[in-house]
Image (tube, rainbow, N blue to C red; front, top):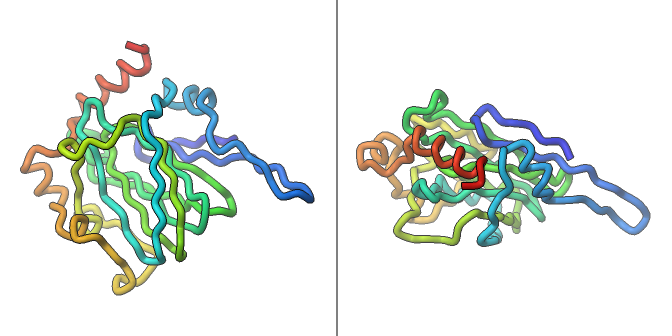
Length: 202
């Protein structure tokens, strides 16, 4: 597989090699050793989530408090989505910036996001099925959101605005500035300390 770091430090795009024959195809969706070499440590997978979304659904921007936070390894097993990594780590050189990768059932790419980043995606097809390997179980009191429509962040979607579908929770989530004022956002220095502890196995 090929692993490429995104413009947001610590986030990676993973492109698998697909082996096709008259039976169908085979690929390695996830290799802990290959990803660990790029990231600096293996993912401690503690929960696996799956979502199914119709065309136009936007999920996110979601994030968890650090530490422990939730690293995510995201794959679209059916359909197509645009997956967004948003740097919401206060003090980061790329704070407020984002990168995006198309995840679909053709190229079968995945995205890895470290703890402290915001995550969102928009479904481009009906019944888009997305699977997430995550490094911690869901903890409602430590999970937060930011509006995916915040103009300060400026996510660009491949669909017209009138086709976008958001949950009430995501539609009413605070902006990046509001979340920062509420002291909800991860601090970049805290994230670096956490990453270092994972890299050394402490």
